[in-house]
Image (cartoon, rainbow, N blue to C red; front, side, top):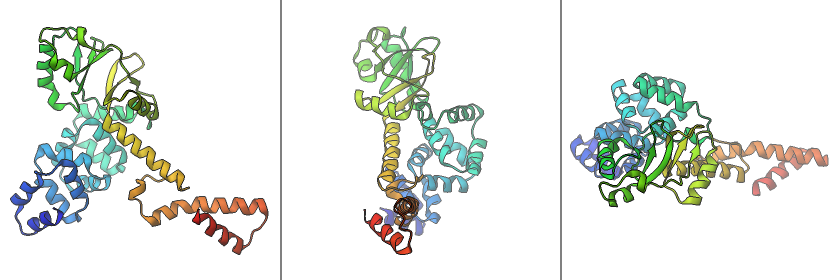
Length: 311
Protein backbone atom coordinates (compact mmCIF):
# COMPACT_ATOMS: atom_id res chain seq x y z
CA UNK A 1 0.00 0.00 0.00
CA UNK A 2 2.87 2.37 0.79
CA UNK A 3 4.42 1.88 -2.68
CA UNK A 4 1.03 2.21 -4.37
CA UNK A 5 0.20 5.48 -2.60
CA UNK A 6 3.65 6.92 -3.36
CA UNK A 7 3.33 5.95 -7.03
CA UNK A 8 -0.07 7.65 -7.27
CA UNK A 9 1.29 10.82 -5.70
CA UNK A 10 4.38 10.82 -7.91
CA UNK A 11 2.12 10.46 -10.94
CA UNK A 12 -0.06 13.36 -9.80
CA UNK A 13 -3.10 11.12 -9.26
CA UNK A 14 -4.08 12.76 -5.97
CA UNK A 15 -7.78 11.89 -6.13
CA UNK A 16 -6.98 8.19 -6.59
CA UNK A 17 -4.46 8.38 -3.73
CA UNK A 18 -7.04 10.04 -1.47
CA UNK A 19 -9.65 7.41 -2.29
CA UNK A 20 -7.21 4.63 -1.41
CA UNK A 21 -6.16 6.29 1.84
CA UNK A 22 -9.64 6.99 3.21
CA UNK A 23 -10.52 3.30 2.85
CA UNK A 24 -7.83 2.47 5.40
CA UNK A 25 -8.12 2.34 9.19
CA UNK A 26 -6.90 5.57 10.83
CA UNK A 27 -4.23 3.65 12.78
CA UNK A 28 -2.89 2.14 9.56
CA UNK A 29 -2.87 5.57 7.92
CA UNK A 30 -0.81 6.97 10.79
CA UNK A 31 1.64 4.07 10.46
CA UNK A 32 1.84 4.63 6.72
CA UNK A 33 2.67 8.32 7.23
CA UNK A 34 5.32 7.45 9.81
CA UNK A 35 7.07 5.29 7.21
CA UNK A 36 7.10 7.91 4.43
CA UNK A 37 9.81 10.31 3.37
CA UNK A 38 9.21 13.88 4.51
CA UNK A 39 8.37 15.16 1.02
CA UNK A 40 5.30 12.88 0.90
CA UNK A 41 4.14 13.25 4.51
CA UNK A 42 2.46 16.63 4.12
CA UNK A 43 0.96 15.72 0.76
CA UNK A 44 -0.79 12.67 2.18
CA UNK A 45 -1.80 14.38 5.43
CA UNK A 46 -3.42 17.22 3.49
CA UNK A 47 -5.34 14.72 1.35
CA UNK A 48 -7.18 13.47 4.45
CA UNK A 49 -10.75 14.68 5.07
CA UNK A 50 -10.93 17.23 7.89
CA UNK A 51 -12.84 14.91 10.22
CA UNK A 52 -10.24 12.17 9.73
CA UNK A 53 -7.05 14.27 9.90
CA UNK A 54 -7.16 14.93 13.65
CA UNK A 55 -7.79 11.29 14.50
CA UNK A 56 -4.90 10.15 12.30
CA UNK A 57 -2.71 12.84 13.86
CA UNK A 58 -3.40 11.44 17.35
CA UNK A 59 -1.96 8.04 16.34
CA UNK A 60 1.19 9.36 14.66
CA UNK A 61 4.64 9.30 16.25
CA UNK A 62 5.66 12.41 18.17
CA UNK A 63 8.41 13.03 15.63
CA UNK A 64 5.94 13.16 12.74
CA UNK A 65 3.49 15.24 14.77
CA UNK A 66 6.21 17.79 15.40
CA UNK A 67 7.20 17.82 11.72
CA UNK A 68 3.61 18.45 10.64
CA UNK A 69 2.98 21.24 13.16
CA UNK A 70 6.21 22.95 12.15
CA UNK A 71 5.32 22.66 8.45
CA UNK A 72 1.66 23.62 8.17
CA UNK A 73 -0.17 26.95 8.39
CA UNK A 74 -1.70 28.38 11.58
CA UNK A 75 -5.21 27.78 10.23
CA UNK A 76 -4.43 24.08 9.74
CA UNK A 77 -3.00 23.81 13.26
CA UNK A 78 -6.17 25.29 14.73
CA UNK A 79 -8.29 22.81 12.77
CA UNK A 80 -6.29 19.85 14.12
CA UNK A 81 -6.22 21.00 17.75
CA UNK A 82 -9.93 21.89 17.76
CA UNK A 83 -10.80 18.36 16.61
CA UNK A 84 -8.40 16.46 18.89
CA UNK A 85 -9.71 15.01 22.13
CA UNK A 86 -8.29 16.95 25.06
CA UNK A 87 -6.26 14.06 26.50
CA UNK A 88 -4.63 13.47 23.10
CA UNK A 89 -3.81 17.18 22.94
CA UNK A 90 -2.20 17.06 26.39
CA UNK A 91 -0.14 13.97 25.49
CA UNK A 92 1.05 15.69 22.32
CA UNK A 93 1.94 19.00 24.02
CA UNK A 94 3.85 17.28 26.83
CA UNK A 95 6.21 15.72 24.29
CA UNK A 96 6.81 18.81 22.13
CA UNK A 97 9.63 21.38 22.41
CA UNK A 98 8.76 24.87 23.66
CA UNK A 99 8.62 26.49 20.21
CA UNK A 100 6.03 23.95 19.00
CA UNK A 101 3.94 24.27 22.18
CA UNK A 102 3.95 28.05 21.83
CA UNK A 103 2.67 27.83 18.26
CA UNK A 104 -0.04 25.31 19.19
CA UNK A 105 -1.32 27.40 22.11
CA UNK A 106 -1.30 30.54 19.95
CA UNK A 107 -3.74 28.83 17.58
CA UNK A 108 -6.03 27.48 20.29
CA UNK A 109 -9.19 29.17 21.55
CA UNK A 110 -8.92 30.79 24.98
CA UNK A 111 -11.32 28.38 26.76
CA UNK A 112 -9.47 25.35 25.39
CA UNK A 113 -6.10 26.95 26.15
CA UNK A 114 -7.20 27.44 29.76
CA UNK A 115 -8.22 23.79 29.97
CA UNK A 116 -4.86 22.68 28.56
CA UNK A 117 -2.97 24.80 31.08
CA UNK A 118 -5.10 23.37 33.89
CA UNK A 119 -4.29 19.80 32.85
CA UNK A 120 -0.59 20.54 32.54
CA UNK A 121 -0.53 21.50 36.23
CA UNK A 122 -1.33 17.95 37.36
CA UNK A 123 1.70 15.89 38.50
CA UNK A 124 3.26 13.86 35.69
CA UNK A 125 2.30 10.42 37.05
CA UNK A 126 -1.13 11.37 38.41
CA UNK A 127 -4.55 10.22 37.25
CA UNK A 128 -5.45 13.83 36.44
CA UNK A 129 -2.67 14.12 33.89
CA UNK A 130 -4.14 11.36 31.67
CA UNK A 131 -7.88 11.93 32.09
CA UNK A 132 -10.19 13.42 29.47
CA UNK A 133 -13.16 15.73 29.94
CA UNK A 134 -15.02 14.39 26.90
CA UNK A 135 -17.62 12.22 28.65
CA UNK A 136 -21.42 12.08 28.98
CA UNK A 137 -22.92 13.30 32.24
CA UNK A 138 -26.57 12.81 33.16
CA UNK A 139 -28.86 13.97 35.94
CA UNK A 140 -30.68 11.44 38.10
CA UNK A 141 -34.02 13.23 37.48
CA UNK A 142 -33.85 12.46 33.75
CA UNK A 143 -35.95 9.73 32.20
CA UNK A 144 -34.42 7.15 29.89
CA UNK A 145 -36.01 8.88 26.90
CA UNK A 146 -34.65 12.31 27.88
CA UNK A 147 -31.20 10.86 28.53
CA UNK A 148 -31.04 9.17 25.13
CA UNK A 149 -32.10 12.37 23.37
CA UNK A 150 -29.40 14.27 25.30
CA UNK A 151 -26.74 11.71 24.33
CA UNK A 152 -27.71 11.94 20.66
CA UNK A 153 -27.21 15.72 20.78
CA UNK A 154 -23.94 15.79 22.71
CA UNK A 155 -22.36 12.36 22.28
CA UNK A 156 -20.72 13.08 18.91
CA UNK A 157 -17.97 15.11 20.63
CA UNK A 158 -17.36 12.64 23.46
CA UNK A 159 -14.46 10.22 23.58
CA UNK A 160 -16.74 7.43 24.75
CA UNK A 161 -20.43 6.97 25.49
CA UNK A 162 -20.16 3.36 26.65
CA UNK A 163 -20.58 4.50 30.24
CA UNK A 164 -22.47 7.63 31.35
CA UNK A 165 -21.90 9.41 34.65
CA UNK A 166 -24.71 10.66 36.88
CA UNK A 167 -24.03 13.91 38.75
CA UNK A 168 -26.00 16.39 40.84
CA UNK A 169 -26.21 20.15 40.35
CA UNK A 170 -22.84 20.59 42.08
CA UNK A 171 -21.23 18.01 39.76
CA UNK A 172 -20.80 15.52 42.59
CA UNK A 173 -20.62 11.95 41.29
CA UNK A 174 -23.73 9.94 42.19
CA UNK A 175 -23.48 6.89 39.98
CA UNK A 176 -22.78 5.37 36.56
CA UNK A 177 -24.97 3.94 33.83
CA UNK A 178 -23.90 1.66 31.00
CA UNK A 179 -25.28 2.66 27.61
CA UNK A 180 -26.46 -0.93 27.08
CA UNK A 181 -28.65 -0.78 30.19
CA UNK A 182 -29.95 2.63 29.18
CA UNK A 183 -30.97 1.50 25.69
CA UNK A 184 -32.70 -1.64 26.98
CA UNK A 185 -34.73 0.19 29.65
CA UNK A 186 -38.25 1.56 29.22
CA UNK A 187 -38.50 5.19 28.10
CA UNK A 188 -40.10 6.65 31.22
CA UNK A 189 -37.98 4.95 33.88
CA UNK A 190 -35.96 7.41 35.95
CA UNK A 191 -32.16 7.37 35.68
CA UNK A 192 -32.05 7.26 39.47
CA UNK A 193 -33.82 3.90 39.40
CA UNK A 194 -31.38 2.14 37.05
CA UNK A 195 -27.99 3.74 37.74
CA UNK A 196 -25.21 1.93 39.59
CA UNK A 197 -24.41 3.70 42.85
CA UNK A 198 -21.40 1.56 43.76
CA UNK A 199 -18.80 3.44 41.73
CA UNK A 200 -15.09 2.70 41.34
CA UNK A 201 -13.25 6.00 40.96
CA UNK A 202 -9.90 7.67 41.51
CA UNK A 203 -8.84 11.13 42.65
CA UNK A 204 -6.98 13.53 40.38
CA UNK A 205 -3.72 13.18 42.33
CA UNK A 206 -3.80 9.37 42.69
CA UNK A 207 -0.79 7.74 41.05
CA UNK A 208 -1.29 6.10 37.67
CA UNK A 209 -0.07 2.67 38.83
CA UNK A 210 -2.98 2.47 41.28
CA UNK A 211 -5.38 3.42 38.48
CA UNK A 212 -4.05 0.62 36.29
CA UNK A 213 -4.46 -1.85 39.14
CA UNK A 214 -8.12 -0.87 39.55
CA UNK A 215 -8.77 -1.27 35.82
CA UNK A 216 -7.32 -4.78 35.97
CA UNK A 217 -9.10 -5.76 39.18
CA UNK A 218 -12.57 -4.63 38.11
CA UNK A 219 -12.20 -5.24 34.34
CA UNK A 220 -13.13 -1.65 33.47
CA UNK A 221 -13.22 0.18 30.14
CA UNK A 222 -13.50 3.63 31.73
CA UNK A 223 -13.21 5.14 35.20
CA UNK A 224 -14.34 8.49 36.63
CA UNK A 225 -11.84 10.92 38.17
CA UNK A 226 -13.00 13.19 40.99
CA UNK A 227 -11.50 16.04 42.99
CA UNK A 228 -11.20 16.20 46.78
CA UNK A 229 -14.87 17.21 47.06
CA UNK A 230 -16.02 14.21 45.02
CA UNK A 231 -16.90 16.38 42.01
CA UNK A 232 -16.56 14.69 38.64
CA UNK A 233 -13.75 16.36 36.66
CA UNK A 234 -12.90 13.74 34.03
CA UNK A 235 -12.61 10.07 33.09
CA UNK A 236 -9.78 7.71 32.21
CA UNK A 237 -10.40 5.31 29.33
CA UNK A 238 -8.84 1.94 28.60
CA UNK A 239 -6.64 3.36 25.80
CA UNK A 240 -5.09 5.74 28.34
CA UNK A 241 -4.37 2.78 30.61
CA UNK A 242 -2.70 0.89 27.77
CA UNK A 243 -0.45 3.92 27.18
CA UNK A 244 0.51 3.92 30.87
CA UNK A 245 1.30 0.19 30.76
CA UNK A 246 3.43 0.67 27.64
CA UNK A 247 5.47 3.41 29.34
CA UNK A 248 5.93 1.24 32.44
CA UNK A 249 7.06 -1.70 30.32
CA UNK A 250 9.59 0.50 28.54
CA UNK A 251 11.01 1.58 31.89
CA UNK A 252 11.14 -2.06 33.03
CA UNK A 253 13.02 -3.01 29.85
CA UNK A 254 15.61 -0.36 30.62
CA UNK A 255 15.98 -1.57 34.20
CA UNK A 256 16.33 -5.21 33.17
CA UNK A 257 18.92 -4.23 30.58
CA UNK A 258 20.75 -2.17 33.21
CA UNK A 259 20.52 1.00 31.13
CA UNK A 260 20.16 4.66 31.94
CA UNK A 261 16.58 5.98 31.51
CA UNK A 262 15.48 7.00 28.04
CA UNK A 263 12.42 8.88 26.77
CA UNK A 264 12.24 6.70 23.66
CA UNK A 265 10.36 3.39 23.55
CA UNK A 266 12.64 0.39 24.08
CA UNK A 267 11.81 -1.37 20.80
CA UNK A 268 12.19 1.87 18.80
CA UNK A 269 15.63 2.63 20.22
CA UNK A 270 18.66 1.78 18.11
CA UNK A 271 21.30 -0.71 19.26
CA UNK A 272 23.84 2.11 19.43
CA UNK A 273 21.59 4.18 21.71
CA UNK A 274 21.00 1.14 23.96
CA UNK A 275 24.77 0.75 24.26
CA UNK A 276 25.20 4.42 25.15
CA UNK A 277 22.66 4.13 27.96
CA UNK A 278 24.15 0.86 29.20
CA UNK A 279 27.76 2.08 29.31
CA UNK A 280 27.08 4.28 32.36
CA UNK A 281 25.98 1.28 34.40
CA UNK A 282 28.82 -0.79 32.97
CA UNK A 283 31.45 1.74 34.03
CA UNK A 284 29.98 2.11 37.53
CA UNK A 285 29.82 -1.65 38.06
CA UNK A 286 33.42 -2.21 36.93
CA UNK A 287 34.68 0.68 39.07
CA UNK A 288 32.88 -0.63 42.15
CA UNK A 289 34.39 -4.10 41.66
CA UNK A 290 37.91 -2.74 41.18
CA UNK A 291 37.58 -0.47 44.21
CA UNK A 292 36.40 -3.35 46.38
CA UNK A 293 39.10 -5.81 45.34
CA UNK A 294 41.96 -3.40 44.63
CA UNK A 295 42.73 -4.65 41.10
CA UNK A 296 42.95 -1.46 39.06
CA UNK A 297 44.68 -2.38 35.81
CA UNK A 298 43.62 -1.79 32.21
CA UNK A 299 43.50 -5.53 31.58
CA UNK A 300 41.29 -6.23 34.58
CA UNK A 301 38.86 -3.43 33.62
CA UNK A 302 38.66 -4.63 30.00
CA UNK A 303 38.01 -8.20 31.12
CA UNK A 304 35.29 -7.04 33.51
CA UNK A 305 33.58 -5.05 30.74
CA UNK A 306 33.57 -8.14 28.55
CA UNK A 307 32.16 -10.38 31.25
CA UNK A 308 29.48 -7.88 32.29
CA UNK A 309 28.40 -7.28 28.67
CA UNK A 310 27.95 -11.04 28.22
CA UNK A 311 25.50 -10.98 31.10
